[in-house]
Amino acid sequence: MTTRTIRNVDELIGAGLAPEAARADLDRVAGRYAVAITPEIAALIDPSDPDDPIARQFVPSVAELDTRPEERADPIGDDAHSPVPGIVHRYPDRVLLKAVQVCPVYCRFCFRRESVGPDHGGTLPRGKLEAALGYIASHEEIWEVILTGGDPLVLSPARLRRIMEPLADIAHVRIVRIHTRVPVVMPAQIDAALIQALKACGKTVYVALHANHPREFTPEAKAAIARLVDAGLPMVSQSVLLRGVNDDVDTLGSLMRLFVEARVKPYYLHHGDLAPGTAHFRTTIAQGRALLKALRGRYSGLCQPQYVLDIPGGAGKSLLDGDALTPDSDGYRIRDWRGGEHSYKDSV
Image (cartoon, rainbow, N blue to C red; front, side, top):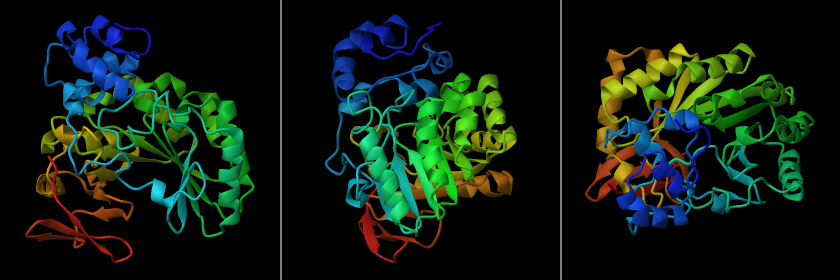
């Protein structure tokens, strides 16, 4: 068992997670997209299973070199809504604050894969962070700040405080939401000092946990989640619908039950974004809708996530199991929150 994070092809092969014969192809993938697999995640992978759902999420594949014309470096249009570095202001009452561009693991399907990793700047520099916080302070319509990146929980408690404490002085900000994978991929990071730093702003703080397969809920992960919830931090979930990982009703239903049992309310199930080299992960919208239909009735209402698509180009999220989606001769028409309509075609 590896005792440190795997960060390159040599270490992947040395850990038995990739064959020597794949070295040349994997070097090409790793030259473009960051690689990191924590010991906790590496321990969950069955190297003898070519279809292992944990490996599929984290071990690089030559399939990532297959890019489609419709795929985009910025598939959900963050850049179009970024008034200052580190801020995405897509919706009136909330902003993303991208304080860090690194993660403890790099998901092979990540929609920000072109902008995260050790080659993309690490943390937001102090001056740019101050400007981002100044933007939030000057826009009284902002009710919620969503910390994302990258994964904000890779930051030390001291660095988290430099974000959370200034937010305490912004009266119109009432909610801070933190999006993270850390409780499942690096659970020991969730300690008393980090939890105290998250509460430093005195606001209502939610933690949104990203997990995609039931095996991610190890005893250590469950304990880390419990530490957060027991400290008074409510949690919601986000998952991505991934071909070969959770695209059957039994796996998806089990995942949602594990969230609920851990006191994490299922929130978002994301349709796969048009990120470069990720077609091998995407399902069709019809498959996703059928899965959501199958969840209903078979599984408690507590286990029902919202199935959403981030409309390519920056128009925001739209529910895929409601009346915002209309089939047409070339795929679908999707209505955004402003009432605008957009064409969308499955890309698998």
